[in-house]
Image (cartoon, rainbow, N blue to C red; front, side, top):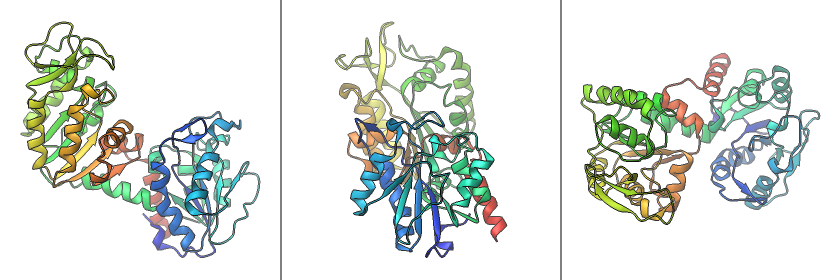
Length: 393
C-alpha cells in the first residue's frame, strides 16, 4: 500500500482519519495514549507543508444528533497544548468547504455524528473525498470497520495511503502472525472462550506454547480434567477447548503445566488470596490467578521465546492480591530477548500498572482490529488501501 512518504504533501489538502477515541471523564482525558500514537502522522504532514484536516470517532453517539458528551473538543485542547497553536474544531463539516492554510491543522468534529458514517453511505463518502487531495488512513483500530471515513473515502478520493501509525501497527502484526520467529508464545486472557474461540484456534496452528488466563484458562483446566471448584468457566465450550489442546499436541506445542493457583471464595477486592495446589481445590474455591510455581515455568519458557503475542491478563490484576501472575508475566515479557507485541485495553492497563509499557517491543492500540487480524480475517481498510495502491501504480 502507499505510504505518506510516497507523496509530495506541500500545499495539498490532507484528510487524516485518526483514532482519537480516548477515555474522557468530566471533560478530562484520562488516557492520552491514542492521541500520542497519532501525532507522528499529524506532525509529518504539518512539517511537509500540508493543509491538514483530522477527524476521528469518539464513543458511539446517535448519528444525526450533536451530543457534547461525544465532542472532540477535549482532544482539540490536548492537541493545542501539544502543538502550541490554536486549532479550530469544525462542526457540520460535510456541508461546507474547509479553509486551512499550509502547515496548519483543523479538527473535523466526531465523524459518527454524520448520518451514514457507520453504514458506509456512498454519498457521504463522496462528500468526504471532495474535501481532500490525499486521504491518510491512520486509525488501525477501526480497520475492521467498513465505514465512510475508513473505507468509503478511500474509494473516491484522488489519492490514498496509510499513515505512520497504521503502517507500523500492520508491520508489527505481520511480524508476529505472518512470519514469526520460533519459538513463539501467545498469551490470551479473558473471561470467555466463546469470545476468543477463533483466535485460540488460529493461534493453535502457529505457537509453540499457548498461555491462558482468566475464565478461558479455567475452561481449559476443566477440559484437562482438573477440578476448578466454583471458578468462572464455560461448560458449553469444554469440547472446543479439548480440540484446541489436541491441535497443539499434534504439532508438538503445548499449554503450560499448571501446578498451583491463587484462589478466593468470592470476587471482591478485599477477598483473602490463598495459594493452592491445582489438585486441592474445594467446591467453593474460585481461581483468580496462577500460582508462583506455575509462573516459574512460564517465565522460563518466555526467556527463550523469539516471538511473543499478549492479549489479556493472567488473573484479576485489578485486585493487588490477585495480580502477581500478571505482574510476573509483564516482567518476563519485558526481559525477554524476543519481539513482543501486546494489545487490548486490559493488557495495556496492566502494563501501565506495573510500569512495563516502555519495555514491550510494540504496543497495539487497535482493539477489535488487532483481534480480527490475529484471527486471520482480511480487514476492509487494508483491502481498500492495497486496491488503491494497485490502481495508482
